[in-house]
Length: 377
Image 1 (cartoon, rainbow, N blue to C red):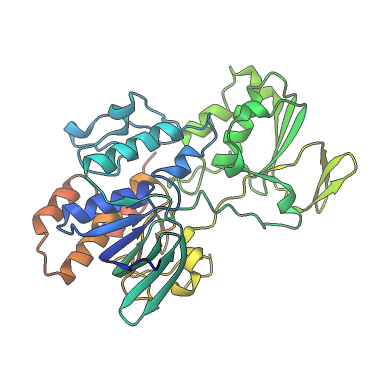
Image 2: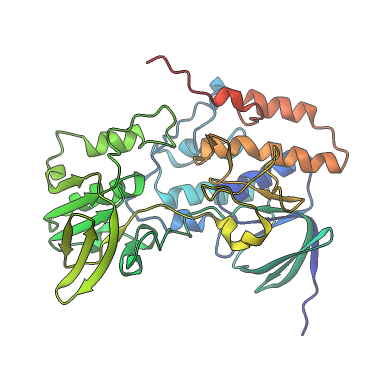
């Protein structure tokens, strides 16, 4: 039986923080008829976080004082209020996202995996395991967690990727090597150090991440991670040895385990090294519809629309404009309304009042000069 093609003016692909957030913004800006396609379930990336991993950005119910919760994806909501916690675990944040889907009555098609996307004149045709969909406006919100960098060097496929770890309790033997010392690498090393059976963790990076102290938290480790890795009162941290200025060339499987080679050193371990070298963006799933800059980031116009493919928008952690990086939720949520308003203009919607409301709540960022660093101390 041939399934009928489902047609919507707007389709969002991805039901994580970006997809749910921009869906709510569409409704706020008067666009009611759209659907969200999700390959798994709402918040699946957060559900798949290691059990012990927590948000590095704090949640706090301060909305009534004009300070929206750092991890909220919609006006007048707070993950802290929903969960009762300041640093949520992934499963707890997924519960918040599901509550948002219910509260705002978003039309989400779960277990709907996109197989192919094609632009035919003015229409996007999306083939999925649930049949065909088509739309005039496509918003890509598939995030990055499901797309780890798995080929940063030769033999990287022999490693365990950060995003494949379900819990650190299963790592119970002697010594481990962690490659990459930014947020995920520090999370791995810190949580492994708490296991009594683990004797030592070698944390390797080509950069001395601990000493980087940029004002933009996208360029240096968060205060939350820095505090954990430098806590002199935590005796477990004695297990962690950090090697910097070391760039890995290859990983090789040996008879007694694994050898990690740099230009000057060889590190040996009996277990697969743990790879924490960052993530690709979900936009690479449809890379033919984007242009990419020299840093591998998609090139977007001022409305976060692909410069290569009209009416294709990107939301989420890989949105970047010049030197402004929107890789945290509190950053990229400020662009949801930009996208929603631009689509609304095509329908002749006047959303000036809603723009003011979003702007008042620091959820509408169209002047990027405010992102210039000017912290005095």
